[in-house]
Length: 224
Length: 311
Image: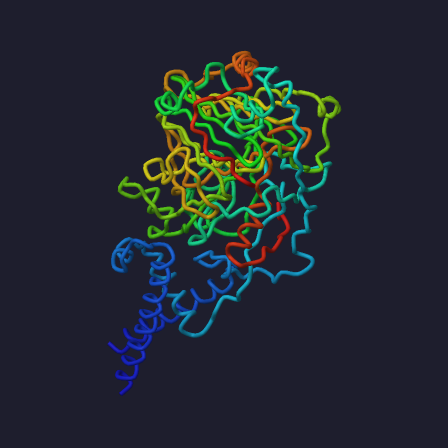
């Protein structure tokens, strides 16, 4: 009996001791909370370098060319767009009334520097974002894009492939920058086929018009 | 007398180890089971946990404490081997914080870990040794590893500074804990099928929440006021909090991390993207990696340690 206790005691203590040594030698604790790591202290050598500050600016708008009614006074255009002078590109026939928008799950929101709108069809949901804010990332740009910075430009259509079906187009117009994202319904039928082609997406964008969403209940502009 | 001494020593040792186990398990319960009870947690433990918790509690009882160090991360663009080439700017690493003031998208109540969902245990391209299980401890450990620009099967998509197309346009984030059946990962992955609201996901900045109400959609978009948008993927669809079109504040909970992938499942993680209007390039996917490092440092009050890539 005495021998049994001695062996049991030895086994337990050896196990506990081994576990302690193993745990202490493991730089990762079981609970990997940031404060509980045994990595080397932060020094000048292992600290990430300070990044260049990212700056932004507001691009000047050229909304004159985007007016639905070139003869209308600027004040009338701003009033028609719910207080926003931003050229809101909208699909043709977009939301004739607040009731129509609600029924169709259409939404339009003014942002501090632009707007966005969401609308839904049977096969996809489309989000359009327009902004004046541009971020300067110090990126080396291809020459063909650099040449187009001051003018309108259209970026290549992105086709992400069969599973996350849809696509996106980004382009510049009226001095502002727009993003159009097509998010397809997954019908489960043929997942190798995208619901939107490059041609269809470009046609959709070409048919966008600077909207005058009269009769819409647009929330007040948000300050940035 | 000898027998009495051995017996008392044995009992003392057993009490010591037992107390250590209970203390360690209590820590685990508090950290990873905010909604579970103590004994409920105990029933879910694997045999290996008993020993680990015992050691954990033993360390606490004898006063061995982990030094208050920071979390660690590999440099941006250091992808796991064979998974692709990371983002770089003019041939150099890109340390840019594209969203320098954002909140970390996983609420500070849980730790978070960035690593590849494809090339880590439990992923489709895992080629390493050891258990092939998404909840293993290795997946829920530092250092973080960038996976922006990782090669994916997509046909045509690009991101700022990624050297090739058909790539991963965001970063994958595991949130919570792994390594045991009581961990958040295991409870979410192998629970009873009810929505698990264990790992809250929050708004990175003030903005508007948008997501499709069409079936099988798994993208939530946060549109901000200043030329930036965030895409969150794989949130538990049944427990999304704001309705589409709702204004949310930075740090506000918008949903919960899950493995929802429309008609199929992925691993338990949050796919996180930043889209930004870049001068001369237009709206682009940009690397969230360093912005996430900065946000994690701020939200957890720590400083990240940059570690060398051993591969």
